[in-house]
Image (cartoon, rainbow, N blue to C red; front, side, top):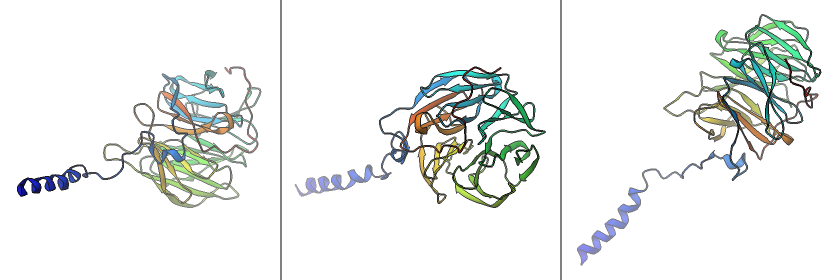
Length: 311
């Protein structure tokens, strides 16, 4: 009897040990701390697929999205209801795109090695030549910053078309985004774990460059960071092979949102009504989902380009 009781006690002691090899709570399907950012219970919605390199995106203040289908040489448009149409064919191999405070859409024509601006009536003006962009951003002063990863440089293009290299210290600068609320530029060095931050000088120079946020990676894949975006609380969102990594204003990874579908992500941004939808792209697809956070309107940005398709 005592022997049986002893075996029972041993079983009660060892059973929890068998289940305690990993005492950490299971990660929710949406990712770590996702409930602070995403609306719980709402799924990711696949808006479109079959694209060939969704390189970059721009959002006007009404929430309409424009994104590049780079290898098909076109720019796509997503209205606030989530419907996708072809907005511009023969885009010059457009990769990076962004709205400026003058209401124009700035396009880095990768194949033609130039930056152009499209006005509301669809007219195209060449801003600068001899630069090849992957991602670009435009500040409230209408300064354009664009990344050229193969050359390991970041360019500044001034409103008058003059240009110069403002950084050449990163291994593979890709995603680049200016803050809409302060003179700050964030750049993802995609072949390293780091996102850098710079202060913007009055002449557009980059000052006080610091390794702002160290991104996380598992042992099976590289981080491969891509597009980046700010929300209205100053948090920074980075598209990576692990999903969407979110850095708080102190530079700590505060959340990692699992990517919808298979594979990593190439871009992340806010759009849709009220800029309260979080959009993500893979190489060939685009999704969106309602969020608890919201994006930041761009001062002076357009509220919709010409509704006619461009050619």
